[in-house]
Length: 250
Image 1 (cartoon, rainbow, N blue to C red):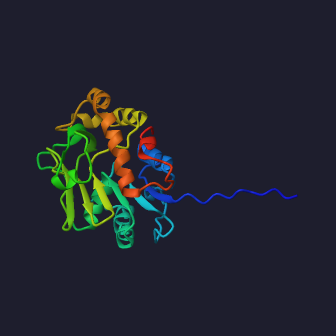
Image 2: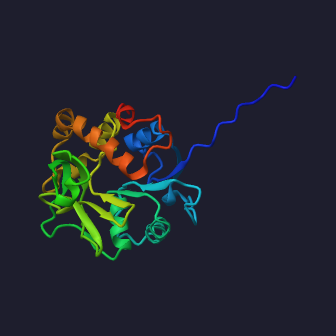
């Protein structure tokens, strides 16, 4: 007698775009997997292609990186142009730091640093706008690691602002979102960033490494909880049994 093999439906995929060989999707990846998604990880700087359609994906996340959205590298232009795919198909899209800046460039906005050279590297206050408050209960402090910010493109809605870089979180249309800050860092990731990025702590406005780690103890619980709510708002849950409260354990 032949045994019956139980077949499970394929888990929906989230296109996950990273920009370095050892980069990780961190807590974003953990929460999405806990919510029932699989990650289709691509690294364009290392030669990975991006799909011509997101027909077989539930959405996309483009993460940050050490490069600028204004760099002349071929992959930067290719990736920025590729954003026409999620926008045209109205698929859920999240851009984080560099990913958000690519979105802004694609939409005709501007990306650049402040004239005084001030950066946001460390923990800084976040102020939700009225439009942002209608959607989320935002954290008071968020973690940054950037030297450039972005303008508000035509047609985009500002959801949260900051002191040094005004535009911190935006929404475009129904399904495209961009955030300047980093909620995805695990503890191990933050330790790596503090060690490998220590030379940037001398830039104007940057905080020293111990402030990064001490700030995590003070403000990360709220940031992590917000991230779970944020991702559920954008992508939903592939498995309805997976609640955001469960994803928060990531």
